[in-house]
Amino acid sequence: MHDEVETCEETHHGVQHEVLDEEVLHRAAAIFDAAGEPGRLRILHCLLCGEHCVSDLASEFGEGMSTVSQRLKILRSAGLVSRRREGKHIYYGLADDHVAELVRSALDHATHDLG
Image 1 (cartoon, rainbow, N blue to C red):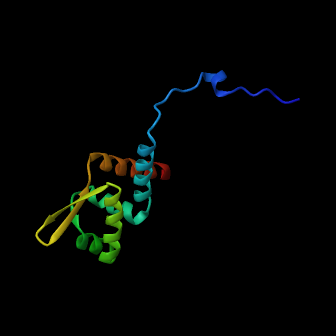
Image 2: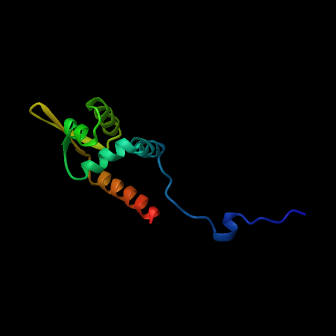
């Protein structure tokens, strides 16, 4: 007396999609992992406006430079931020426009869900 259950293929003939390479999936997951902490996301949001040095970020957030440096190290290792040296200062910025779009989209989506 079991009801017959239709499979996906019977109801809509399956959905065709691109098969992703495992390395790409792992790299993408690492991006979300790195950005998935509020302190690191706050840094990414701040970098939307342009480059900042560690001391500026630490001052703005009221945090120690070591805390900010550790967060930047994680973001950099995931390829989300880049850095450049100018004299004694190292300036951090978003790695590229893809990162900016990702950050904006995530924050826009989170804001949308609140309203």
